[in-house]
Length: 234
Image (cartoon, rainbow, N blue to C red; front, side, top):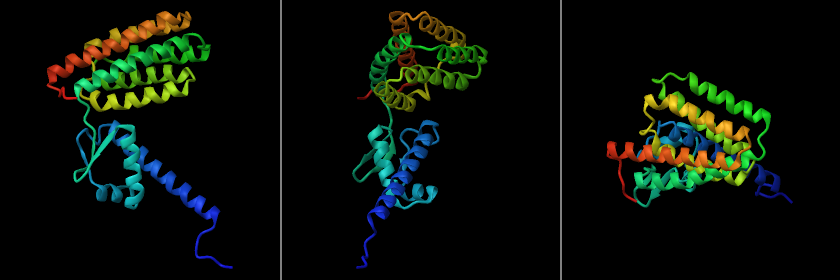
């Protein structure tokens, strides 16, 4: 007997295709947000975005829901969606939590770091030393990669997921608070010292250094945010 309904395999394929499309759109929009092409506070027009990605509004709305769950956008009734703005006080709270995760990553990695992982981190700190003081964006990129590597090298998926979520949220705030060019040589050496502690398998020392490093970043952010008149609302 013929049926007008698709078979189970066809249903499964349609669901997989829809899910994959939604995820691709969400990842593309996340890239636009984290790169600053969609700035904090930007209104997200569903019609324009659907046309941009060549999709219907159904998958787009699912993608927006994914981004809302990750904290990168917010949707309000009758106001639509927009890229989230992170207030200075919220960014400070995020830094507090991330400092603890940095310390946990340092402690875990010091206990199991491999020669290949050490070489990767050494290569990254060497690249940091070569960055010109005027190239703040390049150093910022290397800095994010360095800490992401440390977390990823622990092999702890829960730690990695939580850390990367917080890092993405901080990116919404930090793009206007990059470190001063004169500080680049100092931070290159600070990163190198962290690698020394990891190589020595000094778990407590690595944890303490990474915690202090993150807290220093928090303090610089607060100073820069206050000078720039960043909002403090919670």
